[in-house]
Length: 331
Image (cartoon, rainbow, N blue to C red):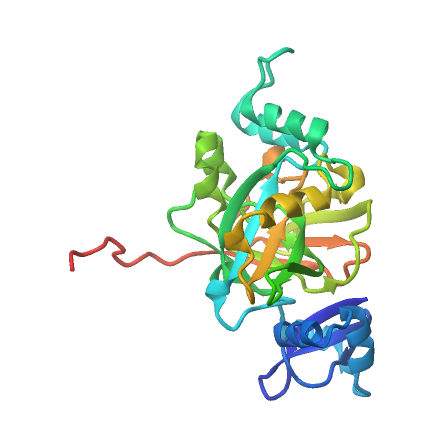
């Protein structure tokens, strides 16, 4: 079961269930997914059961809403500062080779490993602990708040100070913190964790800077557990022609960490368990066009798709405007 958020004819944010690639069933009442989820928690219901019970008789043309740009990110928060976007890296089998190629060649054997390879090896050895046990913590990063989120079909703005803007096709987990402080997972989405790989290549300690970029996820929220083996496709088109295309894999069968371990090491921090907050957490990837020598340019369109996640996630990269003076003034 997949859900989308959309703008109705009155400009109200609403939720709909995806019946098929062409048809949506709006939920009643006309409220956002955030408000709907809060209501479901208050009533002690399962999200999937509440969706089934709330489907109205009306039907919408899904493709038309996509073309009109009325499909929104699957979830938002009334106050963007209370939607946190974060992620974990070096979590996927093969991702170490991709990442390591960006900052150093793997030295032969023993302890002569780059920090990336050491971190990746730690995940292989302890990223999937037995139930109830604590696994090794992954690489972690902060991307921004709700203001950094771009809707499906929206533009990913490349700041003037950026050195590069490349896609990262990933799966993102979507969470709301319940009134009792317990994280509640709504489901999973396709995501484009747009990053500055050229900046990261200069020095790995620039990773934090390289992640402070816009991102996109959706258009659909998949309810339930994440499939163990996800097969998707990532591509870049330029002037209507495909300039790069490659399959990507996700799900725990293709990861060095379990989803539960990644979630545990994110939500162990009390500051990430503030009631009412929304969390969008990217789980990492093993596939980057940058690793294949592709330089994305303004005007390029990224497309990410995977079976079971519905309509593709498409976003165009555009060049940002010159910034006004941002230096602080004495008060």
